[in-house]
Image 1 (spheres, rainbow over the protein chains, first blue to last red):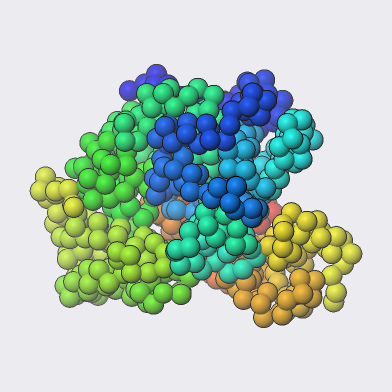
Image 2 (spheres, each protein chain N blue to C red):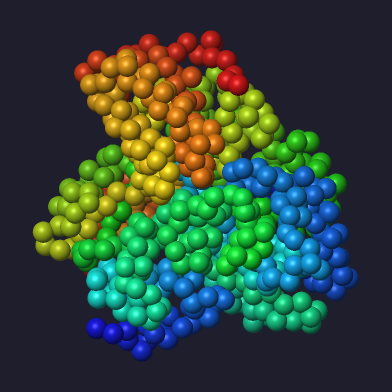
Length: 444
Length: 156
């Protein structure tokens, strides 16, 4: 698989791709100009987005056009309305939106402008995780250029349409990547998620209609409006059209962010793009789409990378961020790394999550040290079962429990081999009866 | 200590981006921390609260929720080591050991000479360039554990 059609990262290969001059030289801002001057009506844009079948790239895979259509009718609801672009990229393994913001910030701004026109937005806030200083600098630089060129602010390109866009930094809390936690944070508060309903389209920022979209989702918008839904649907697979940015990390020869059509097999991605498992080693496990999607057995690497195919093997497409583990990796230790992360990031408002993430971390640490028991393995399963599904205000509890459940279903033998072992039997000796991978079946 | 004119001007510019002043609180805390030795002292919290017309405890509640805000003094340089999954798989443990060795500070503490604060970090979004460390906010990616001493020794 090579020579596939690309569009998301094409401009990033040009020098100074983050500047207005280079963006314009490649046809940048011509789509918003056409939208405003022709004009293409907001309804037509939302219909085109719906027809494209674009599924949100932030993790949940919700259709973007449908989300936009949830915004209330302007005729009956006069409240100001907003979009928050979720640039709080924090899901372990995920580092794709960063590439777009650093290398092609004007592409994101043009997507924001089209979205703003389609939904009649007063304002757009790009919520960038606080650690992404370079993204913040690049987006702010692009915003200053765009504003000076009359592309952001009042009476954009003389059309009479006005919209403010601003960048806003987070401060290191993963939970603020959850859409309602993000809105709390944007309002200057702590970030515990809000119960839903009400949903953001009815009660979002400052109680007003709000839509929250991922960076890569919005970045797709100008391409879809310029080239049409039919063009977009010809890329990828029917249920998940388009290209996606696949960040692949861990034990591969060539980690990187690759632009690939949805539906490409994970095996092809690892072998043909990422240079294969590093150091000539064997594949043991892989995470399909960010830490919340769990450690899947290496035997399932033939699975196509699209939402429905990954769901069919008991995991989730998530953010499309693949993490590869070679034969020397310890699944218990890797599970501990993730459990510790979720413990650290739990906001604490729901007891299942606050307590559950701590217990999982403690038990996994005990097992990894070799001091655990077989009952501990059962206990992990029991606790994880109490944390999911849908038992808490937001999905962080599920995100902590599901990867462990996936790992247990694929590698239970390795967890059990740690019980009473006195040390980690994998990293200490690499002698452990791992689950026979030929027996691993897709989990419902 | 009250807010300097410069900071008050900065805060006002930040607040102008939002329909409600409070929305500027997190950007303002970043600015305040950067201007006052890399941490938010009780006095800084009070100054900030006064400008935002909030109770200090409300500002403290926000600041304490977010890992990027330091509520205790830090060293001249803050060195963070990512230990999440991609970095873990590519040697974060060795990187942390080298950082602790080079700075004389264990993770979660400041070296006796006050030069370095070392902390562990969760995923920083640099997974395809793992392992990585963060020095005074700037990413250093694809780091070779053997090169840690030179990098940290070369700081001003």
